Image (cartoon, rainbow, N blue to C red; front, side, top):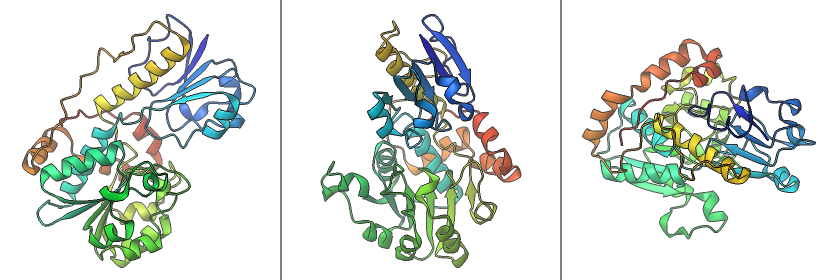
Length: 337
């Protein structure tokens, strides 16, 4: 039995070695030869799992230690009989804390501010709950889920209404064909003039040229971006136009990364029938705090102790060509709520 693992996934070394041949490799370097004899892969977003990689291999299980899965050709995997598991929800509180760090640094306060949340899955719901507790007026829109009939529309407003009402818009949608470049010229034209824009979902949900035009014209007054089209080759002009720029690390909390690893380990162990506990969690990682709403003052006090987003911004601006290195060697920050 053989398992191939992205070598940047934390807390995982030594877990599978008693039961299987275990190989670690940089996620962006996986080839057909790398995976040919593997029974399972444990990956991040940098491994593109498609027919070119998987055809002719022994792979029957792919676990990604991430919430997103647009790097996996799920249609091909279904045809090939390959099971896919994600770590949906693992990093919700890490992203939540990035959003609030960005809001604080941008000078946004809850009083008199309407926060528009586009995408209300694990992350968007966490942001919604925290924003309501902190005193924001919150409006929500979840076009993909409503289109798929997963939820009634009573909890959500239409995207047009959200854009007309929101002083701040934050994106938390998955990347699929319905959301690709949804933040288009028409999107920004419909928004309030001077809107604050945050994206920590996927870079490709934003039309890059449209956002640059909106920033240059003042239609978007300030932007905080953690994700970028064409990563890791980010557009330098867009970087210069943003107020806060980070290298795809919004969800990189210590507990979030531990849970992402735990969910991948559990999925692979169950699939392969390995004697690893169903509730396995890395012993060296801290447990999560109980989820609770905090006041704005409590949030800003906690942020001062635990996360200065400007450090990540400074590092990326100093060396954008080191995007992958900054992300791969990131020192995970602790969650505090």
